Image (cartoon, rainbow, N blue to C red; front, side, top):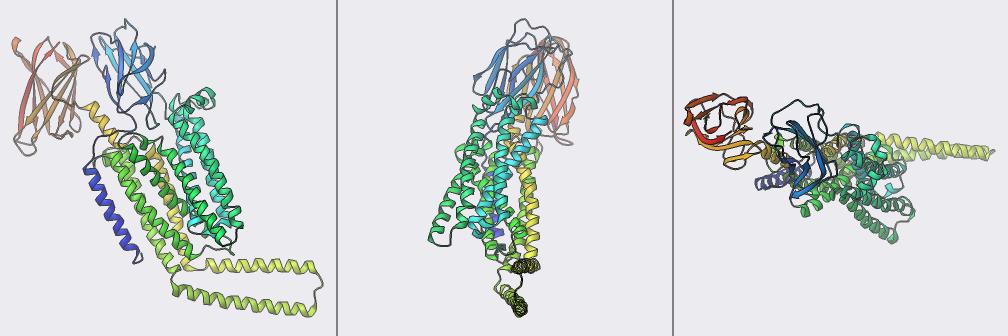
Length: 640
């Protein structure tokens, strides 16, 4: 690492730590990538009477169709009537047929969140008493299966195509203008355009099946395609195709008229025009992602969308430019090798891109996670840790590349190379002159033979120049380090693609909190279930918290009981022991002890809890927080 690189790396590290700490410390509530946060009837409830409707509450508004919400009887037949509708806020309901028989019913849902991702799932509730059900594989296949895999691949190709197209063009205009006439670079950028265009069309065709039935045959359903075009995601994909038409014109000028211009004021004006036009088109393409995905919903969308655009442009400038540099180092013709000055210019562009990535990436991390615990407790956070690790590896390899770049541009090294090259050139010129003299003496008998010899000499000279270029130890070291960077970048792009399809950690934690633990204190009854919240304090260190009892269906006979223990801040509290007892003092029954099984952190459960008769029962809970610290808290509740 050069002396100028070390301070810059330290600045990046300090900036990352400072901004991350400040943002995560002040995180507030938000959501994106919808999750189910509530339902009525609730999961596992045994209701005395058949409900008239089923309602689901999500963490954000969702899009539905006629089959988005279905209710199936024990034999697997649908019992809903009409189409699901939005009843209030983020709650959606569908009405049920009257006179439903006793038994277990299955609710399936399949919706599309505001950030364009399909959300599907299922749960059961019972009427009268639980029963066997023939429903299996209850969850719809939207977003999964073969179509889901093909859609994910299309997303990866679209990101890769954008990175190569935008980054490759930026490398030519900002770092190596002579590269506009290099055929391998032209093929690279055009290949990026073709990949992005083909992937966009592919995603447009797959979209209906991806968010709907999950069947590959529906890819060619024109009616389904018409529905997709009316959605936000469909509009984003169509706008991307229109921008790609403008990008095709940009590429044609860059590799056509631009290469034929002589150096001068006219070419400088064309360079400026291409730069402005290229930035506008690239920003528009990046916006087509931001307007339809995570950035467009949840917390601060007005800030998140521009930040997302800058993030994508920085990724393209760094990784796409890196791909273009690798192509130039390995495939550029011997007569037009990439200059050390161009490599140095790209090094500065890459550093600026990394700086932008750090700032925008920290903001995105705060927005999608919201807490430090989400890094390890959610899949999004775990993938993000992998991405951060890969970026750190890339920065480390980039530091090595900067060292090779410094040696390539070192005046002493360049002077030595120039002297060696001059000696070799003089030797070659002398040998040519000798050969020409001999031929002059004998005369030219065959013009065609002379032209053939000239072509052979040109090929030999090009091969010699290539050997001299490839024999440069500094250039060889730079090629290897850039190749390593490109390999890590491919994996990084795959992880980034997976992140865009993963439920943000903030939403995942909110959904878990909403469905697994009660939010208020007191006694609540929902669809026949009973919930009691009781604060406790064992008196020892770390002895305060809240214990919640869920009893379902809270009636005479067998019941299912769940016990949740939380700290005052709402986080799960994994205490050593929890015991529960039931006492009906009016009839001198009890205490009836129940020892629930430990399920997970802060969660205990017991099945078949028998309540012999209806009445005002005293429910006592003993919580032990250490070997010597424990307390018993109790509340009365009407059961049966």
